[in-house]
Image (cartoon, rainbow, N blue to C red; front, top):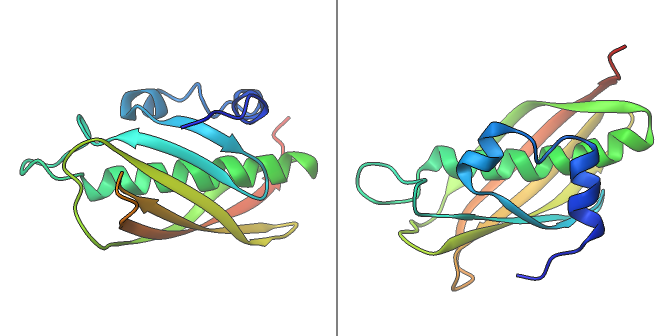
Length: 141
């Protein structure tokens, strides 16, 4: 996975990579912009008792990517983004390697940002699709 040097830098500026959960899940970013966010996460360490990628782990990856994109958009408006709704459909299991998430915006407004996130395995098979909506709020003082 190639890494866009500007993307992770922008993610650092909004504090996205300093979250304990992002580190604990092993999430790595490859591309970050208000138009597209790409990241990956290892399956190992993020499984449920039967060795399958945990559905909650897919949701963490999806929300991380959509929230980063929302915050890049919000920052340009002098705002911050916070997640208010997420849903996920799990299509197939993953048992090893990495999964990759690609988040693209459905709507980027002044008060809401909505993203579609597709997570695939290393064979480019769809593992999960998710939709995240973030509210854009005034930056706290």
